[in-house]
Amino acid sequence: MKENKIRALLREGKSTIATRLISTQSCFVEALGATGNYDYVEFIAEYAPYDLYELQNFCIAAELHNMGTMIKCDFQDRGFVAQKAIASGFQAIMFTDCHNAAEVKEAIRLTMPDTPKDGGCFGYPNNRFIDYQSRLPQMDHAARVRDTVRVFMIEKASAVEDIENICSVEGVDMVQFGPSDYCMSCGKNRSEFREEALEAERLMIATAQKHNVAVRCEIPSVADAKYYMDLGVRHFCLGDQMNQLEKMWAHDGKELRTVIEKQ
Image 1 (tube, rainbow, N blue to C red):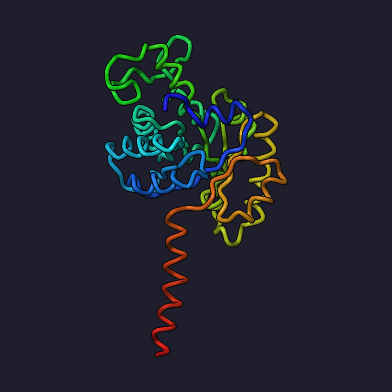
Image 2: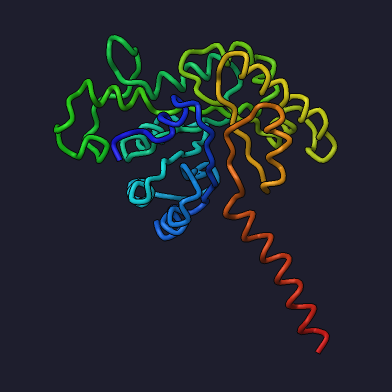
């Protein structure tokens, strides 16, 4: 896949649907792709162990099923991981834990091409993104790097306070609210701070829309989409591999144990 599918859908003004995998095993990517229901798949690298070979295999499996790919990076090594991911074929980078517009700008600089036009620091690595050898002209490579979709988690109290400036930064393509980290940054448990978190999320959504920045929301079920659709949101990440497994293990496992223990 040479075209960035996620970028193309954003340019066309279309909605997008994704889901999250905590495993890089290609069998899960292919099983997901075989359904034909998802525009792209997100690997939540922030939560999982992985190696760099697996990033390539993840992208290869997705491309075979015409799916785009996104990786969610840790904050501390975001530049290294993002560059390796892009070189492996990932089409979107989700940056976590940025506190303000300055940190957002730095994340963008780390992943923009190193050209006079862009002022970034991503060079011309010999990886599958350029077909391993210098077959792709340097400026074509720069254009593809430039097309990478850059997504920012708004999950710190300071980021919510600075949301106008963040959404004004050139290169911010999409934002997503992170309620758990937001509540933690406010010194609160999420269970006791739900309404305040929802208010902060609505502020983020309204501000992003004002600046023509796409908004993406994670939802656990299809029924949860309506709330966000009524707010104008059109990009969704449905479900989570680990959460789905945990629900099945907790519910079905308990049910089976109850049945067996009644015998």
